[in-house]
Length: 605
Image (cartoon, rainbow, N blue to C red; front, side, top):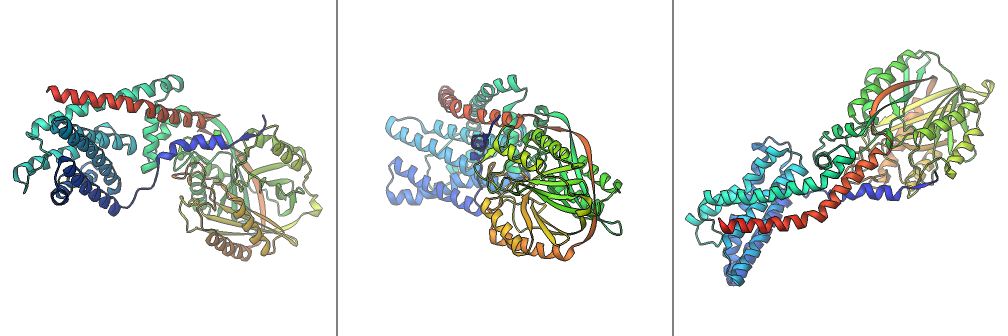
């Protein structure tokens, strides 16, 4: 295959992400609710024929007391009554949306009463049934509360609406057109209308779910629910769906253990041949931070987690699989004692393949920067690795620097970039033992003052400095998903200003930063670059001071785990996006039919 453009892949993955946005603060949502309901009360009075002053005073009061009041109380009661861990902000937003929907129905009813002489009561009851539907759909699909809890939460707001209207009709200071008569009968009618809407919702779910259930063996409606649940509240239920989608494989994890002269471990370079995705906290997305934390706690030495030559096909299904990798790394670090104390820098003329030869073992890094650097799949990685071993390296660990995010291309067999890598590796051979020299290694770690939304994962920053004879090299590794080329250029310039002969910025390709930003959230896009460069600068200083003579030992181990499998992520994304796309078409027609049926039902009762 030739080069495959990644733009379409990203666009497809982004389509469902369009539904996500950051909610305003609780205070703003409450202000929006009161302002909307006050304005609605005024407008409803004006439509009914009241004067401007009367509408402003009495209509505004009705809006605040009869519309905003029940909505606010329902939002406040939802978390404690139903043991939800969601913040008040989520329920306030649902209350605002439900109130907006009911206001539209009330407005239509008021116009119908004025122009057609229709009864307003049925519009009030249908409006409350729609309030129920909005709450149920938001809690079930958006918050993943399950059917029973979503049903219970959805009852509160319409119940309060009926109760407040009944009390106001009996004890209010002035008459309101929003009267429900018998509260018991009104609530029964609301439940009947809500039943019509729930039946419509079930019909929509059945229609859009059946093809995917037949073709993929999973419920895409369930996948959508769990996807929204993950994005909103970090739930991991989607991992079980991914497990049905995935397959068991064997892959490897490589480790270079550096020891001081006294034999204690200085640092461990870890190269897991799994992909750190798919997104958020699912699967392997947080593996760089989790593996580093686990290994460092058990070995008492800093761990640098690099991005191996793998793509999304090797996304682990379960986040708990991290322990398999960490156990393997710790075991190799404690077990391996055959160490090499001499090294030499190796690189092709372009610098696209560069690294260090420790005796005959090679730690080789790859990048097309400043051109786009995308994932390198495992098969291509093995082909390049075998090329390195054919060139004379006894053991070669290949690392994807993943440091230049553009609208570039995926690396495939037969593409020009592949042959550039192949030719570069073929031109390199391990320097003769006589030309290799003792080396020093310095390590510095730093937690960065950035959030995941700003493009930085929990592992933060690691800087490794190598001194071999009179030459020096520096690696700045950030827990991020790729980097803007201009930021990478600024980091390289910073490294050069420190007097290093070579060096580069690297990222782990963590997909934990791919939350609300879709599939593209590279380092530097939402990151304050000056602050990041300052942190890198300080870490380089500390790493230089930390440099001391070391030895290196290579090891690699096979592990068995469950991963997405070939093209599975794109299939899942396609299934979810298809579900959403079909729902956009089917839902309006079904909802209109349900609305007409609900009105007809309430009319004949």
